[in-house]
Length: 378
Image 1 (cartoon, rainbow, N blue to C red):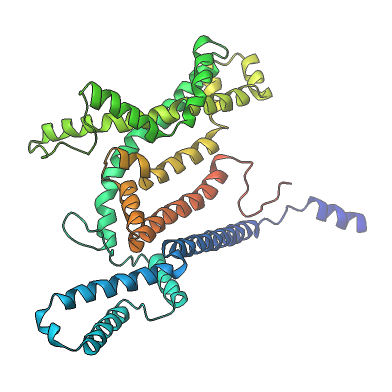
Image 2 (image 1 turned 180 degrees about the horizontal axis):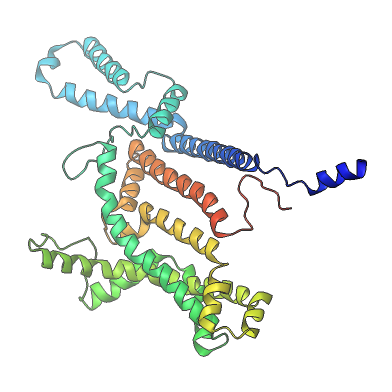
């Protein structure tokens, strides 16, 4: 009987009714944990940005001095107030300064206001800029950012997406021709990417704008902008040539070299040799046994490329006077426009966190070796 019982238990089908709920619970816990962890990272990063942008509260001293200077100048220009005794005039100025400080909440401790700034930033209540305005005259940070984003996306998307796919396909081409003359030339040119894009931009401006006079010095379109749409597009493309060329010269060779080395590593795996022994074509081997295992890092690189499209290049856009987010951030830092600085950082932080969160899930779909929620292999 005992043997029979053991045999029945041994032969009984495994109970799998609880596996699906267990898996969903594990994935839900993982998603919740990653979401909380990434949001905590955003909170810390944004709060540090608030502290740095306000110089730890020292910017309040500068603001109070500016308020006192502005109020004093306004009072001195009012002839009706000049008849007041000096003591009353001084008291009148102090009262106006106190009222303005209360309006701007400068009478509260910076620690309290920094928490309020953090909450406003995280809820995308970006408020109003202190100095900068949009082309329509609005000082709302959201409108200022949205006005600059299209210019940055146009320049960055054209340059970086072309750069990304060109580097991938050229690297795959070179991995099949390891040691060729073109391969050695790319390796030799890879260190040129250590030179920043804006430095290439300066030389391109000197050559093609200053000496040859064939391309504009900067800007997005001619001044005044052409009214006809074909002429406007032609002017836009002409102004995009130099900044895009600077970005490509900065990154193309090191990008090709990086991906070429990556493909060479995967092409030397045992399963690739097995596929060659089976007589599979080179195109099939590349698609199934080289490109497919490298999809996770390719997707990661592509995702972060999309994120950086929104960020813009601060110095490059400034060099070419390109009216994008990068130049806006440079202007905001130069004049201590804190709401614009914080709004820019919050926008990039949210895009970065969302991308990392989605990549964690996407990895598990692309690569079976990646297990979501700490799943154990048995």
